[in-house]
Length: 328
Image (cartoon, rainbow, N blue to C red; front, side):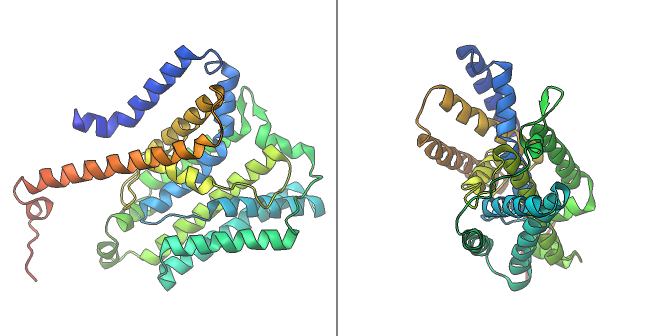
């Protein structure tokens, strides 16, 4: 039973909560509400896919929210001066640059990911406020709203983009050499380096990709609000980390999946939607998010401790089973 819940516990939890809400609330099970739920969580889902790769590699990024705002602001400015395609490209490039800087500082300079990404978050937000005098950018073309609020058939465009990103990142992680390098770096960085893999390049690529996906999320958010705002996407980094941790990705790196992250995003979104339907104050939502993070991390730590103790009681653990001695 322990192994079953470690493997499928997240999916069982999601199914139980979904069924309970569907039975107890006609508003929740309304198809329009379910589509809104998918649309509203697409931005967080795309950012969380990038966060999953970064956390599996052994790091994380606190600047993704500011990075999403940067992408939206750059795109909005270019929309007004040039055109929509150039604005979208410019937004993605700007956010990718921040991700690249994060990767270089972490992999080449050796600064801790927490300090690095907290610093770039503060710098990015500060530059946005200074460059715009803290004023939003209005007057964007309404045709761009299709990116954030449009539909392809019955499905929102934002949700379709989230699904595509999830599929591509899943394939990248599980079916390419680069994905295996990411898992290896997070599992044992030194052993990966000794095997001939360029750990620095892997980390730089992961953080750059994470920045690009944060930028894509910012472009979708811009399409939903049709206003470029320097305060956009505040707190999105914590929402993404919460969804990734709930989805089973280890904070220590080397373990995780995009599938788990997708379920984590939907579970967090479903809980927030339920709180709204129950007229619970929005001020409680951050508290609920924090509680879920603590529960998920506690469950992960307990599972690892139980696995370690079980391995220690069976013939000395994994190293002895592999024939690796402890002599110098």
